[in-house]
Length: 222
Image (tube, rainbow, N blue to C red; front, side, top):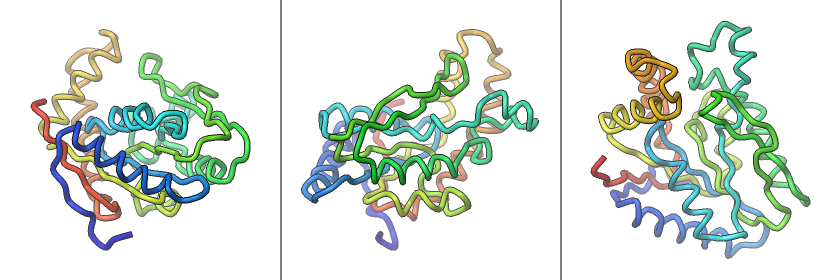
């Protein structure tokens, strides 16, 4: 890992081209490898990751961190449901265990995903086939140096940090919450969540940027 990430400013299309190049370098090696795509909430990293997997075809599999949110019932029991989305509301150790298992697996492995429409995780929501050679791992906290997240960086052969300006992130997240909640929550509630949880998460994730191999600032109108 480089001491400082390679800094790039790219359109989403150019970023995808760059990531395809990075992926092909990993695929040129024998065995199974992992390419990490990190960044704060609302930066578009999940879209980039899914597009990369689609471009690479069956050789690659999408592995989202979001499936390791703590169950909502557990958060309510702990009294931390209001913090949902912060690092301490994830099963970070279980996610690291899952990645270790994926790196070594000889057969198909199923994994969970987070469903925003129900605001909870769904078990066995995707399958990584035995033939997969590249894991495209995506999530906010892949590069954090705090426990238990520190374990994840060592499991990534190449890590890319996706960045979008904070003001654009705020606007995107307001739209996301309104669409995902389908009117169940007020605009005021959504704004409070963005300001109290999402944007502090963005700031936390930004501090992990130096642990990436490359940092891409996406050039977008919105």
